Amino acid sequence: MKMRKTGIKAYEILKRVRKASPLVHHMTNWVTIYDCANIVKVVGASPVMAHAPEEAAEMARMASSLVLNIGTLTTDMIAAMKKAAAAANRRKIPVLLDVCGAGATRLRDKSCFELLKKVRIDIIKGNASEIARISGEDVRTKGVDSSEVRNDMVELIKTLASSRKCTIVMTGREDIISDGTKVFTVKNGHEMMSRIVGTGCMAASLIGTFSAVEKDLAYAAASALTCFGVSGELAARSSSGPASFKTALFDRMYSLDQGAVTALQRVYS
Image 1 (cartoon, rainbow, N blue to C red):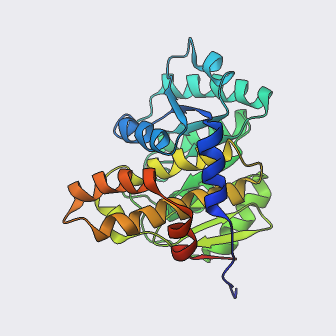
Image 2 (cartoon, one colour):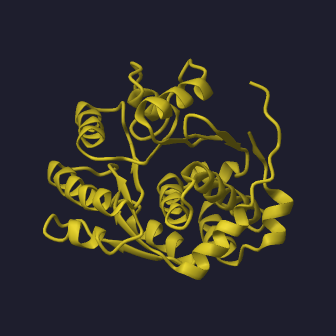
């Protein structure tokens, strides 16, 4: 499929986040929970991490969006996620599911499909092998890292988005987003982002945050990944390795301005 560069106004969505400061409820990966909270905070939103089944639904009733991540799943957490998502569905706020590690174990596959069956998921986010597994392909994921997928991923994502009636976000060297009709390809980012743990989970948090203020979820996801990718490119310029890069990534996301986003964004449709 021939793509052309598109002038999405990613920075405008970031400005709305900074103004509205939405509450983003997370039930997320314990490995990266601190980073997820920080990336939401630096863009001006308000993160909350409420995993207990006794309060998950109550917290979802206060939030502007809900981010679910099965990276460190337990059966109790899945039960709590269903309660929170059901409450979010009743309020019609967006629910994002990061299918972290789908295709690695039977428990992860079962948990993903159970959530997709029991509650409304508005955005499914994962790497190539995770998304392929959710689409029904017989693929294996290497822990939580993507393995090779021999498919036309754009068509697979469009088809999955149409069949699930949701927005699909596939992250990787290039990020592909589709709601079944529109397709965005985001080519921002830096190789160093794959050298630290947590950038995938942070991307999910940012997508959930941008979705809290933008009803077009594919546009929100493309805008979030554009701003994140541009911040990664800027951070790499002043970093000497993974540790300094991670610090710079938060700083660049915090100080991101319209000039940088407009000059550097590479989004195609």
